[in-house]
Length: 139
Image 1 (cartoon, rainbow, N blue to C red):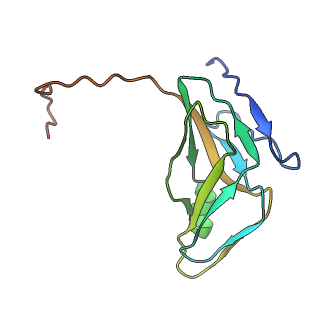
Image 2 (spheres, one colour):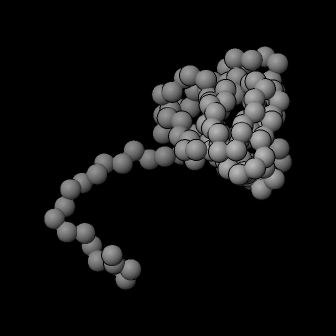
């Protein structure tokens, strides 16, 4: 079993559930809306989640759409995945978009709107070269 990563979280809205995994083995924790909102067809909105986190250096958070909202209502995230860097300490917010051409979408405070996946990310040093190595795939 992989070691557990401890990530400090600050509840900015104490009335919301702390994000958690719905099932053992899930890759992402559910993020919830910190306010009621509605989205008309093709409208987008920045939705607060009521939490802030402190990712350790060497890790990043990726905010991903929920498949159920996508399939049932056409709801996605404009800049998916949304990237949370390790030094960001502000409230997590999700830019949702309603891709359904006909139906508006309503959500209530506390509804699950996205999921957060935390992954280890290496620091990369880009090295300029004259030529890249050849591969079977090529260009």
